[in-house]
Amino acid sequence: MSCSLCRLPFTPGPISVDPHPPPPGILSEKLYNYFRWGVAMGSWVPGAVTNLEWLDNNSFGNMPSIPMVLNVQWESPGGTILVCHTVCATIVRATFDAQDDSLQAYTDLCQIEKVLGRPMMGAQGGRLSDVDYEGVGHKVDLRPFWALNNEERNIEFNWHGFMSNNLGWMLNRPDVFPRFRPTVAAERLNFGPSPIATSDILTTQPVDILHVLLSYLSDASFVLLLSTCRLLRRHALTTLQPHARVRVLALGWAVPLPHEYARAAELRAKNGQAPVPMAHAQESPYDGDWMLYLSHVHRSAGMRVRRHLWAIALELRRAYDEKLELSEYADVQDENGKMVPSKARKELEKLVEPLFFIGQIFRNKVPRSEMAKYMQNAPQ
Image (cartoon, rainbow, N blue to C red; front, side, top):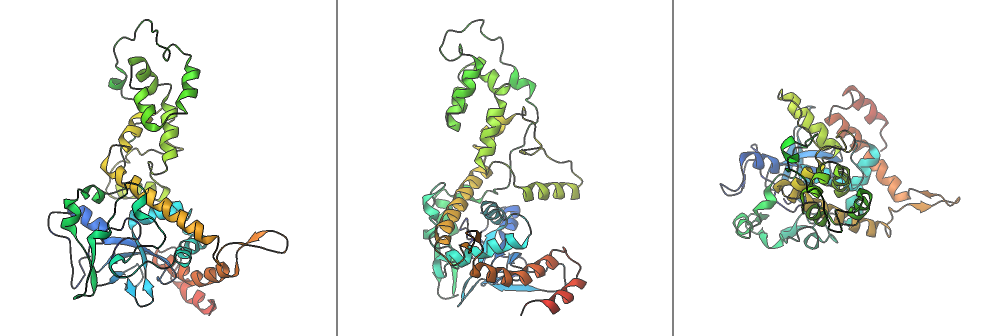
């Protein structure tokens, strides 16, 4: 029952009849609930891309808005279902440019297992072949903590071994972002009097030279350089904020994805709370405190996890792209020299289409009355 991105376990939901929860004291209640839920992707999944809760004993389930109970077997003789924790799935969808609820996006996500093969079974159940989980990000190897329990015929995660190896940082939620400050606080601009004159080679250069120089520095060197004296610190918090903004946005993982913005706003509105300022490429001011935000995303616990997951997702995409080129799902050239979807891709889209429609009904995106009408005309 491991996530196919982070490779951490799922926690059993309250309706599980034979739960195997982690030992007491490892997860808070909020974290426990976070690890309960995942998103299953694939042509073997009702709805193609569906939110499911781990029920333990090799099964996921859910009760969507229509009168139906879903129960999906995670590992079967035919293979293992690709399931990721909710935020892990959001990151995978971002790296595959499949964030919207469209037939094309769902087909792209279902194509992952067609190209890479279904996730592994047994002690390494959930792991995708050809993805170098241990060689990217923080280079964490979780394989020693998974073992097959032959008695119960399932796999178990060694929580105590995991924690004793100082890996508890991986349990932080990767969707807890630092607060973005739309203006620089007055106290941050209080440096005392600036020197009347300077003589060093750097601060005596025109600011335009500084703008050019900064673009060649790594994030760490950028922050260190601008911390060396009061004059540069003042520039960092005023004229050079757009440089920090460019660096934040270039990271990819450092700002919420569209779905995460919407979800955060929805939850706070539901609880009668005012929106929390979140860094946004279009809506956040260019001269906001991007320097502070850049510092926080490299130091906060949740962002450390998110950076690690983002690296694994990019590695997954690399492995996928490499195998896609040689697969039957790669685009082909037609008689006019134009690249078009292959026969296998078209067949997959036909297979996913009815699943996609059912998924839209699960999410209340179409009237239920349309379901019977659609199923009458659905391809057999």
